[in-house]
Amino acid sequence: MLDDPDAAIVESRRVKCGICDRWIKGSNTQEYSLHHWVKHRKKCARNSKGGSVEESQEVVAARKAEMEKEEDIQGLEAHRALCGKCGKVNNILSSI
Image (tube, rainbow, N blue to C red; front, side, top):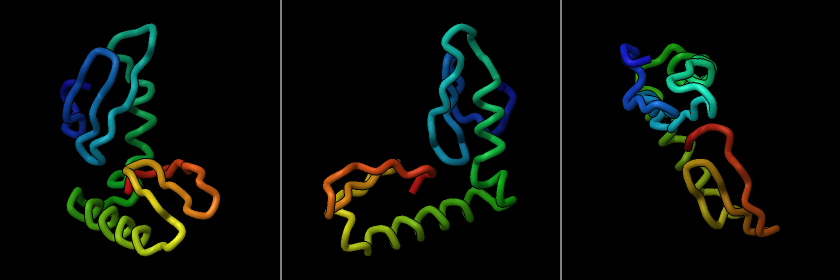
């Protein structure tokens, strides 16, 4: 994990992904566990679409712009949105 170019910051119990800038939790019982990191890398935008970091950022920016146009969204954060109709906070699966 320390030699992985996609791992921006490596700590004993978490890793910051250099592709999507998310913190990926590690094991609660084992330091520098690879399980969650390997699972994340398989799902990460660049790895699943084969694009570059710049292309991934463009997709994220476009998605955010589209969501900001929605009248029913009152609040928008990286991983959640506030519904103006029902007042519930909804989790967004991938980064916006």
